[in-house]
Image 1 (cartoon, rainbow, N blue to C red):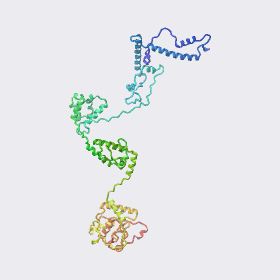
Image 2 (cartoon, one colour):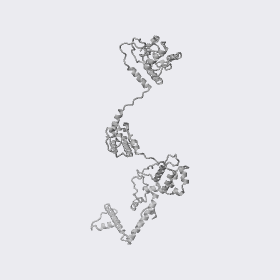
Image 3 (cartoon, rainbow, N blue to C red):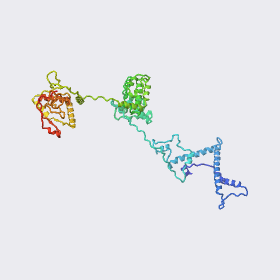
Length: 552
């Protein structure tokens, strides 16, 4: 009996009759023999004299049916006859015996088999609170009834095997909570007292802390040796530190008042609403907050601002916002709407695919803003104007000197500094030291870079002096060599007009005239760079000017 109780086997207290009863099989065999007619032999095994296998199968089936009928009759006998009857007392005693055996089996079972029910495993510490219970419901009872215990009772010869975990019982990480910043109570503390108290209440609610215990739990969230810490530990009494939370809140706000946050007025919302705009580039993107098309997110923002301005039920300012819509939205959204809900719904109803095509097309047509004028761009414009200057008149005409004293002469473009003999010598040395670039594509590129650097340093219309040496165009003549001031080539004479006027920049033309005026017809030695080739045979030839300079 003790072994059966330890193994959790149900024990029935049944009354056994001392008289011998026939088994169902024997009764069936006897009935079978009596029902056989005289003179008919039952088929038996010739060697053992026992019934044949066919008869044994029939007897087995009949025996099972008889056992079922016997169990049914015993169950009927156990039903109580009435209150206080023998059957009722027998049933109560029978239920008590079953309950005792069942309790003993529940107490002994964890020693031989791990708990398989989630609640039982949670109680024993086998699993954590974050385990995925799968399809199990708390309504599933952790205590099995008697029939389940009887069907799952261990076999005396076969040890119990632990059941494996279900596949869906995977560990699930718990939600990480951000630590609550401690409150100091200092005037420069960035945390508002009211905000801290609200965050503390939320944290205690998550921890299922009773509201009556909040005042006693706030101490660890106060910064040590701060104003708030001293107030809690010294100014408050023990009753106040453990008393009702409402009284503690009142004292806390009185000691640490919060800065009142002003509400945004309806006029401010209206100003923000009328200043809202959306571009073609934004239409082609999605919102970072909701990952929805940007024009839909923007429409929701318009409606929120309209509600803040308290005009959501009117058509006020709809026209002002509609005028700022990009063409892709104006093309599909009408200006006439009775309220902001209809207007924003019309914006959100536009298909994003169609809207993106329109927005891409409009963005590609955007005109680039004009480039601001700088000394470099102005000089480039002067170069372009010089190249497209009008051709000279076909009829020859006598031109006056560049800076004649009469009123018919052209006015100087820039300021010229008069030089004494010492400064003229400085000018001669500067001209001789200046290297003229060769007449090649590389030389032209280097000359343009030098000229742009000169313009950025002195200005396009800067004054000329002995220190402002202007780089000469490749392929032109040296200064003070009787050259033409318009093209930089050899002189053409007064009767012959310049065939290439404007071939050199205006600043170089002014520089050649300035050097001619200050130094006269004396040829300055120029350190020119020449290209090796057939043209080198003419390097020894010198053509001196006449000292008068070329005419315009």
